[in-house]
Image (tube, rainbow, N blue to C red; front, side):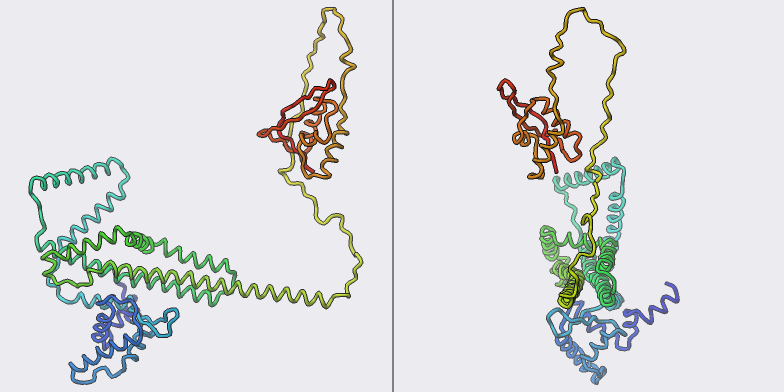
Length: 478
């Protein structure tokens, strides 16, 4: 409540300007009857002008003179101007006729005027109980000690058990007529305030939509930066207390079970005698429909943000595609102009079209060399004669010949397994040659050994018997 701040608000805030206007009674009474009483969110210009004509005619008839000389359309344009800001003028998609909606600040001013009337009944008990209930929800919902929460639930359970026992014994405590009327009026006031609050929520989202349109109109950067700025602002609103509360409200209201429960409760409450004596507003019977309509208006405002961004992206994509096609046509035209003017002889020789870069994962892991352990002792035999024929029967496997087999096989295949290789080039020296192939695979950095899969290698020994060896899957690569 700073003096300078209040001075600025007096000159700029639409609600204050409405209260200080010369024709404030006429304006407030008409806008309340046209928008707030029937809970209308938007109205076509022609329909609203007809209602304003009727309203002015009644006022002139009562006054006996022309008090408001301007036409209804002129008043509407004046109230929707930037200087006043009491109405919001807009055009719906696919329609040429202007529509008007009540501004949030205007509804605040009218609500303040409505509260100036002396209330015949001011309920205090229900509001105090609401304060206690809210405090209990805050304290119990933020309690970290499990034992404290269990104790609170046990106290509630004990109170419920006592009430059940009383009802079973025939003692039923009922609210008197005053308590029923007080709580119903409190509920009705809260419901009306909730409906009116949606205009403020919708106005915040419209402000974001207007800001997005201004950014798109003046944006000269990249699409990614614009998307990040727009979605960042939208996420910022969604993460605020207002955005989180609206999301929780919408999820709760869209539940079919909750809608049926609210309708049933309103119908039962309206049938009570104390409530019928109040002659309450019949609009309360469809307050849930009003809430859903107000929420849908806000959701459509949010959807327009996505549609506006999508339209911008489509326009940018069309412009970029057009620019790409223009560049391609320029290249084709230049190529046609240069045809026959370029010397076809080679003016440079390249050893290779691209450098060969060995990838780190293609290199084999380090294998430590085997170090034999030599015992510094001379074993003395028992003096028996030992045959030396086994020394002269050793088989020498030529690894160069085996490497040649692998290279020849890879000339026609990008990869080949050891089983297919031995089928093409049968083993001539048996198990020794097979062991040499294994050694070549371990030394070749391009070969792969899969221990999870196996393959069988067959060969015929020198006595004509078929031998079969089961080995891990070995694949040689070019």
